[in-house]
Length: 184
Ligand code: AMP
Image (cartoon, rainbow, N blue to C red; front, side, top):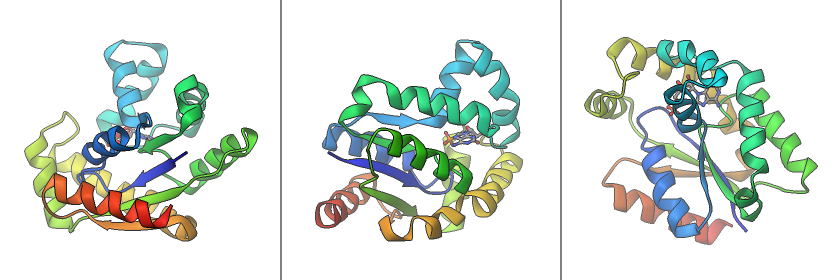
């Protein structure tokens, strides 16, 4: 059974790789950003609470985020493994995830880091054009990544697999699958 966390700055292609890996590994792709966007599209109370943060490129407060992920991990499909994309994004969230896993007698298999040069990130994000992909918001989200999320790389150093994510999608997925084969 495989339980993975994917880490990488906005624009690293995490979401794209998550979709490919989840299919290959036959585990659900759980993206906190997608869960927020679905809630916003459906105008749920959680969506209304989260919207201003996504619009500003800021992290949604932990009370909201942690509870949303806890509920999602309780769903039957996640009992057979999962691939978490976008959560945890801070070390306190990683502590919460440890707690959720421990309650269920689970452990992470690995943490996969996608590495891409900064100029390439900005180029990709400007090309993607999601509503939070304007130049100011990109800069803000990259700063948030550096200050809040990058510390996870040290937090998870014992489980970390670093993938060079510069290159065509299929090449990057092959590198990731190969690394997972040898490391998990
Ligand atoms: P993403 O799709 O992963 O780029 O996430 C888009 C936005 O959703 C982020 O800029 C945050 O506003 C919010 N978000 C996603 N995951 C988290 C998280 N783990 N903690 C707080 N906010 C999050």
